[in-house]
Length: 378
Image 1 (cartoon, rainbow, N blue to C red):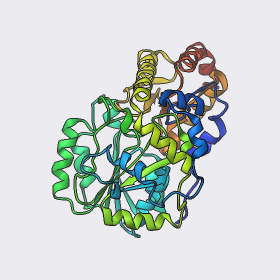
Image 2 (image 1 turned 45 degrees about the horizontal axis):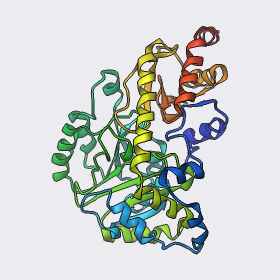
Image 3 (image 1 turned 90 degrees about the vertical axis):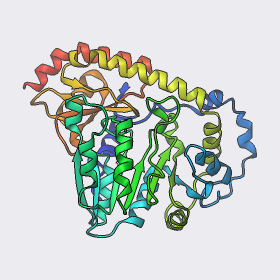
């Protein structure tokens, strides 16, 4: 089976660079190299001494050491540096899945999490999360976690903080996962792109180590406004990571030494920048939460508990693509329609925009309500 069009990325490519208020992105508004160097107190002349030779295929050792410190009981030999989490996921799926295998995941989902397994001939077991949002319950819920493990899937994909809903694994979820994993003999993949931006003080909970067949993906790109660095990683058992590294040799082979260098410096000095981003993110989420139901089109909104994105429920009868197009046309606000997540009745909002752009965007949304009503009623 062929890979289909990537719905989300197609829309992002059209609108993200020109949007006056970009709420369609799933990351923090990107920094300039100058801004990043100031936050990290980095002398950019160090880049002048950097060799442009290929990095080691697994990633430079000091970077793998720094990444391993983000997890409990993980060694640098269990870390593979990749070109974003996209490559990490692509490698994992090709190593773990065969035609006819069952893959279980929460729904709605980021397209790469299910599209690549489908292209390999896997069958999907979707566990719906929208009822949790609508009832404003925290966490994934015991029943949903049990559904995730039903029918002995070959692979369970646990994406958290969850994209697009912003749901996180609450303490009760973590304990239930540990209980369920004890009797589960297949693989569990923890896609943990937003661990740096959870409600916890530093790093959100990681599921790696919950079983011998647990693996994890992560990245700095979306959480720190450095999407262009394209650095991610894959964590897993040492022998399995060696297989993953071998497969990576057929893909990007190595990553940019410049990106590796900047990522190393960022991880070594992340906390000040991380705190600033968390503060700005929380202000944007709070601002929207206060106004949500007064904005035309929004019926309800459950603020995300982690990550950068949330899913807002639209008023009955609104088509998510038509609404998103008109919101961009009349208010300059770019959002993603839930139709791009192959469901209807919602929009995905990203809260990583600058506070000023975000505030002005909400003002334009408020002021254009009557015009949007007239256009949607045509």
